[in-house]
Length: 346
Ligand code: FNR
Image (cartoon, rainbow, N blue to C red; front, side):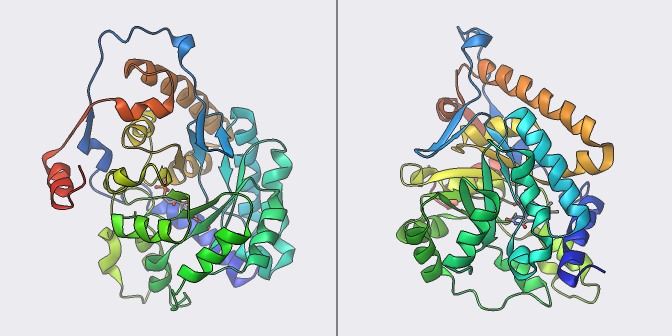
């Protein structure tokens, strides 16, 4: 018999699937238009897929498998399959929250499998922002991790009847950043970030963020469906989209390495994130959807396609690497431009 925590992990996967297709009516990436180059003056071999997130993190590919799961037998198997593909395609991969494995050591293997399947790749550990230094060290050791994601999920917790109600996290984040010697990435879970949050994180010593914006997996919807008698439906459209969050981060690019995730389902979305300042791009719900619906061979094929297409799209944009995308011209939709003007982001 699995614990109620393990059951919750299974429910997250099945509900993320169930509501995958209709999570949002509008695709926020359609609000960004790339300007085509007819004379890029490059050859495909010139184009590299590597990207540097920071001095200590060099990724072979500009997209990675974002934090999702672990904590039950079923989700351990999903982690094994995802890690196998991460190794094969040279993708970084983030673990789902490991706090369950710290409380219930019996489920540790459903996370440790990520490193076992991918001994030399880049792996991110994952815990909540209220974790202690000792817990952080345990989570990192469990995966021999290259970085630690600290998820900040206030909206999600507030929807869950059993969720946290104390969100005084800042001092703890500061302590963790000072005590842990691998990069710490402060990460949202699909609600995005704004200038105020970036500034607060910089003040705490944070150097890496993952904006994880609205537009893809919607934890407000998932948690509301999970708790049948819950009444916090108002959050279904809460938060900043991924393009909005990246534009919010524009003036902080020198101080923060900004990663993007949230609603990324195509190679063009990855390119648009790069144009808006992301150093790498995480994909959760879409890859999970392909894996669960169509199987590991289909996800394998999709990942090969993404590698090929992203290299070609970089060439089409006239650049030889992902980081140079920030120089590529783009046009925003009237609605997004209105947002940018009101928030004074340009
Ligand atoms: C998640 N996500 C997540 N994030 C995190 O930091 N720790 C976690 O344990 C989980 N768990 C989790 C489970 C499932 C089933 C999904 C689909 C997602 C959030 C994820 O990393 C990401 O921030 C959001 O899903 C937005 O990205 P997508 O799904 O729109 O690509």
